[in-house]
Length: 494
Figure 1 (cartoon, rainbow, N blue to C red):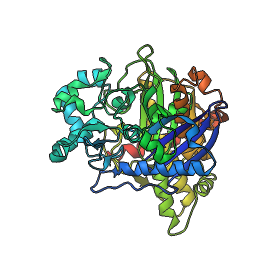
Figure 2 (cartoon, rainbow, N blue to C red; figure 1 turned 135 degrees about the horizontal axis):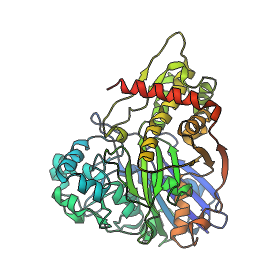
Figure 3 (cartoon, rainbow, N blue to C red; figure 1 turned 120 degrees about the horizontal axis):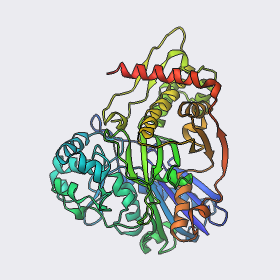
Figure 4 (tube, rainbow, N blue to C red; figure 1 turned 90 degrees about the horizontal axis):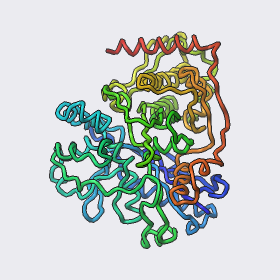
């Protein structure tokens, strides 16, 4: 029994096919091999063509077929996708404009205005968030700035909803998806009609709901013929990339915590409560395992400039050559904790939630031309990412969260021993590394949603833990001093 997972990222699309019997990945591919372009027509804007994501899916499926997988044997499909994006289609399901994606900052004033008008009681009591810079505020930006285009909008969707539409011809969404756009009223467990009414938007702009995990739609005959899938193949799982990352790591229950360090960096804690940070430094979304009978929310800490910073740094250092990520990690390894005073603030990828949607920009502080080399720069970047995430972890603790273990996939920044050790010693939590990724997790979700697995426990029986990094108590003071110096430099920015 084969199950397919699609992970639609802003850098690339990953696809994985798992064998349901063993839970192991049979084949995994990425398309394209190089990072996708993010268009920025104005400062603070970030856009991508949704059609490009679909082209990546079709090319990725061709790669899977070329490796000997019979696509008609795939029983169900799961979709993971970059969160908070806005995709607009007309009544012919044609895309009306490039998607406004997660790291776009243009909608901040619209979210702040709605918070001021609707008030804290509604926003933090019903939405559990300020509308901030999320999908709903981006839709408001289109309404205000592109009124003729807005008048043609049939449905406003998240990126995963768009991929499900392309597979099936049906327009649907999920509670988890609506929540990440601040389109979800937690008290009513329904779309946020009061927010929509405040902006004079018709509630019909949002697609009808399907379960987060369960039957959502089926692959149409035409698409099946085009791609080589079986007609009627079930689509049975959909989640934004961070709820999906947590799901992929078997983080399903209250008190469990996952982290990721891809293009953006995230700490994601599951809770059984409706909690909100009235300063909007962290955000609460419906977790993919939430049901009427069992409340499950995810509290999310995000730093936009994580892998994006590392990618930028690599590009700056190559100077026409090619320095690999493993080589960067080797450069950082001999540098002492604290990078001999060099400080890197990784805030150059749009407005940061942890600073209440301010765009601070990236900063490098205290460069000493006689002491600092490339290794210092690389280590300072890795430390800066961890320290930025730890600020959000401190907020989670303020909201009543605590954890002794953080689960992560052994990939992206966690391939660096320096990064993983800095993460464990700064957060003072054991870091468990697993052999999985978002595409494999979405494939497991598809199998669970299709009923092949009877429970989460059964779905993750084949998940392999590959390493554990414990905090080193003998070095705790070193890391706390480095973190303190980083915070002081940050405070100096004003």
